[in-house]
Image (cartoon, rainbow, N blue to C red):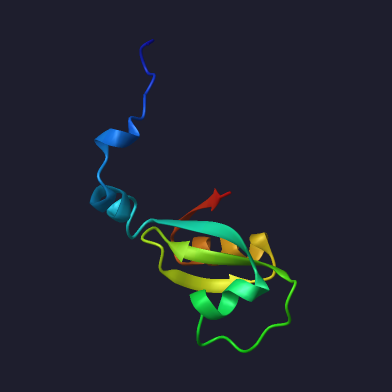
Length: 88
């Protein structure tokens, strides 16, 4: 290992630690299908099946917003002073 290299050891990080990682400052953008909307956003109106959407979530997984573009989700994160990261 060279100086400045960080090695991530997943077994060394607890589930509880991961749940609070970046809390309050990091959000993530995840592509979802319209069929998944009722589970993540129960208050959302009915959406036609087969659509590709993007959800912005807080670091702990709490859904924040739903949109049809990745750019809009990132812009919403920035407007709320959150650092957005993508999840694949």
